[in-house]
Image 1 (cartoon, helix red, strand yellow):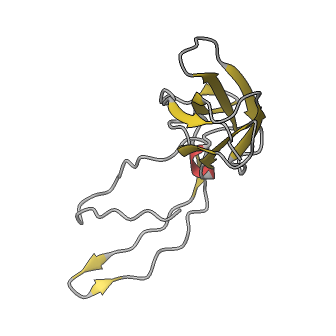
Image 2 (cartoon, helix red, strand yellow):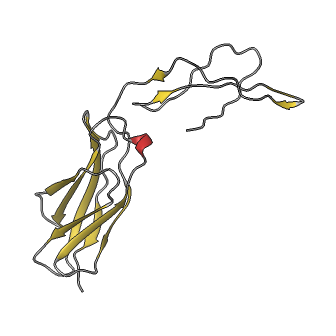
Image 3 (cartoon, rainbow, N blue to C red):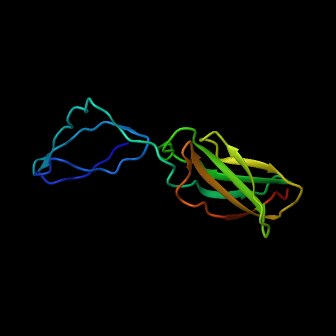
Length: 153
């Protein structure tokens, strides 16, 4: 992951915002009226940041309605940069709109962006949540509730 921030010539120490559960090395470039220098050699000591819970949940949560009696939930899988720890997975929750009890299932493959759930209904409205979590717990961001439909084909 490349990061580029400019500091004035008197700066000797810089504080950067780094992602949790990362290992970083650094290079420095100088810039003046003549242009930019070549990057310095990469630091030999690595900087490792501690893990944390994910700070967000997946986006683009939606349903497909092309399979009868199936609630086909989809989302955009998250970039590894946002896992922030080990054992990253998604928790998918669903319930019929207007009810109170959630059903749930886990998707343990971080690259998978779907879950097909068998239902006994056709084109029925559901409330859906997709949450990110890792070994330290659920994302800091509360999960949004999305509306979707079970299949009708």
